[in-house]
Length: 319
Image 1 (tube, one colour):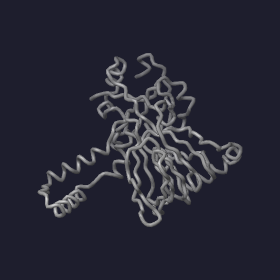
Image 2 (spheres, rainbow, N blue to C red):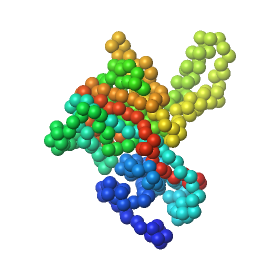
Image 3 (cartoon, rainbow, N blue to C red):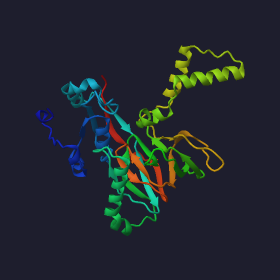
Image 4 (tube, one colour):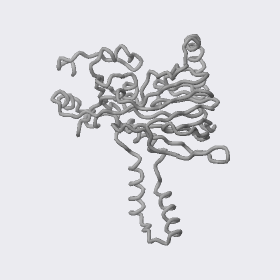
């Protein structure tokens, strides 16, 4: 279809998609779901190279990052609109990652093509560590190293074994370091605020109803407890968790923080422009958009921020 319009086309499978293909293309069309779109975006570093997602499997993927579902079966119409310029650009902000510290390995494990068990995941990291060790020993990490990947949705840091608490130190916006234990840290963009971060932080109507009941009994105020009011409060809070994809802020979430005499959590969630995390973990990873995993054990330091030059150019095509 694209070729009939006189457009040079190269069709590649996921395993064939690499930096050379990205350099060749003037624009990239992702055919799949949100996961495929995230994989495609992870290798695009030029903010001038448009990326368009087509959700070819709407039964299995919501397709938030893709064109509206109606264009899955009406792509010629979408192509005509694109050629006529009947769309608007959306510059999605992305996260960049710097890694430094001791005992670090900047070699990623690709999770896009496989679902790994915990042992397979640990084995993959051990293999990449051994494979990259000569290069790692020769490379100086006296200053933070910018990783060759950008995150469109979110970064997650935590122990590979989900039942084990993650131990780390965190600094938000160059503030003081705070020792924490939790189920891990999520740091998302506006694009990712509709995804995992939203589900980490959203409130259920049952919780809202319980809080309103306590508030009513403690204050004596005439707080309505109708189902309609509870739904309204719940929806308004949950909607506040979602922000625009072109917003230059990050949103961090501490999952299930442990607070006691040793560990604290002064802010469990909030907007920020920069987060630094120093690992004190045993067998942890830093996962980018659910598809790329970096070893992140004791001594490793991640600096997480945004830069305008990392924006991803995408298309908004109305229904």
